[in-house]
Image (cartoon, rainbow, N blue to C red; front, side, top):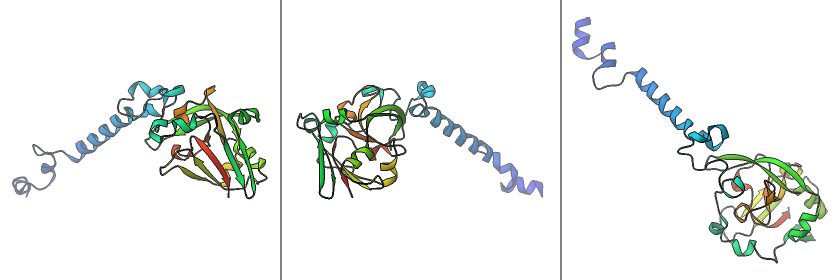
Length: 216
């Protein structure tokens, strides 16, 4: 029977036939490939692995103010509007509306938070953000912090020009209308003159180049 199995090509002898991978070798190859991929992209999220960051879409610590950028002001076509001296952030609730210049926002009580910015491309980086708590702006138009918001960017078009913010983020003291990043005025590519930064939100929902905040 053993001789017949050997001649027919069935049984254990077939697993290591010339030109074919054994099951063990195949699994080992998959594991090695996965490990190599992780080791050459993990640097986008872990600074101590940055030297191995060969194929990741972004390197940590690069970009304006040492934070990577996915969508630039040029891509969004907002450079002129964002840089205008006439820019104001308007907050509305029913019949109440308040507009703030950049100087007026800076004159309000400021909060500083260390929060990550996480992109759908796969990278994440923590940075220091400083600005006005969004719940304070909501309170300024007589709305409760349990409100849902509609936030609109200066971008003339795009899937993420308008963003809905659930009440849980409005109530969170870490959610800011950020005016500074890593101790400096926001770079234009990071959302100057003002942007949203909130804990646990994907980067595409951290609206840059703010125009209006509407209480729903």
